[in-house]
Image 1 (cartoon, helix red, strand yellow):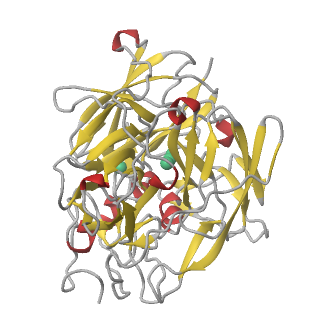
Image 2 (cartoon, protein in one colour):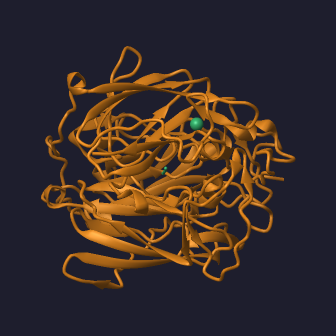
Image 3 (spheres, helix red, strand yellow):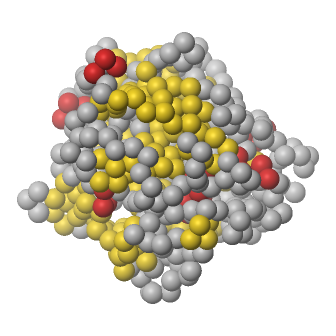
Length: 495
Ligand code: C2O
Ligand code: CU
């Protein structure tokens, strides 16, 4: 069975990972309307702070029409509810854990104090006290550094510019399976400077979380189980390269369709997949239909027109597409040029009606400080390499919690050289946004980034100013299977 072509595993390349063929019958494409995750309301507010509550729990949801899928969801839904909040406004999110395993929640892209950052061993234990021993990962026994019983208040000062952030589970050794089961949601930050721009807004501004999953014939997600050596019995070794599904979900729906007005739309694209990279393209119409206005860390200085958008796991691209160029009735398919067969298509836009367009994309969007390499006080080298069987390493070591690889000082600018082996590695830095410096092989990136999608053999330099908070943070690969198999390192910021 399966969704693949005639039983052969499709789309797997040695650089990307192992496809898991679904056993469930393929849902039709472009039949399910695009869902938009609900926006979470604060439970209360006081002078300086908005308070939110999220319950992490198991629920059944309908993803493939007619089948029930068991998800681990924030509030029981996948994606979780969207937190839509203001830059500079402090929020507190109480995460209550009703799952059967411990969790740790990370706000990806957040400028967050260390004890709310979702360190892999800052665990929130299940509320019922039914703690299932989480066992061993591929690299040692897990000893929690901090434990919260049943719930934890994560404090986010939000002292950062407007940006599309997201939150997801980050537990030691088990981030891949936890996120795959559904623990991911949007966290949008807005500010006055962005609100003052005439960009598409309201129902013309839409977050799109793109993920891939495979399904068992009862509708449940298929994820290869791992034994305590990191091996996946019954799955080829190339699972080490990351888990790839054969069904593309956008906001949790398989190959959905969105009816659009013939006006500009702003899409906040997030690659929420464990391991899959995408190159997104429209099947017809303009040659360069994507106007990129933002990146991981918020708006670019100026818009950049693109033919295609290449996204590694965890990267965000904020793009405007102008459907005003098409007649009602036109259908445009969003393709993934890096996939094939079922994974070569993502979703469809159907231009439904003409409408007045009040929006535009100004030539000047925002401003941020361009960090000058001459100002860097230090250069550090990080190499990302395959380790022994079923491990991945940074500078030759698998993740060792508490082993500090770098001690940057608050206020200082550093250059980090990232050197990548023969696999693809999306490299993510917690706490501060960086800039990708150009070199001979790779153009400088116009945006502020927290994740850079590096491919086999690439080297790049990132430049970053550490702005605080003090404490322990992480640098890691955001291929979640690589992360779980050791490709992560601690660094510590001090003043
Ligand atoms: Cu989105 Cu440390 O991760
Ligand atoms: Cu990796």
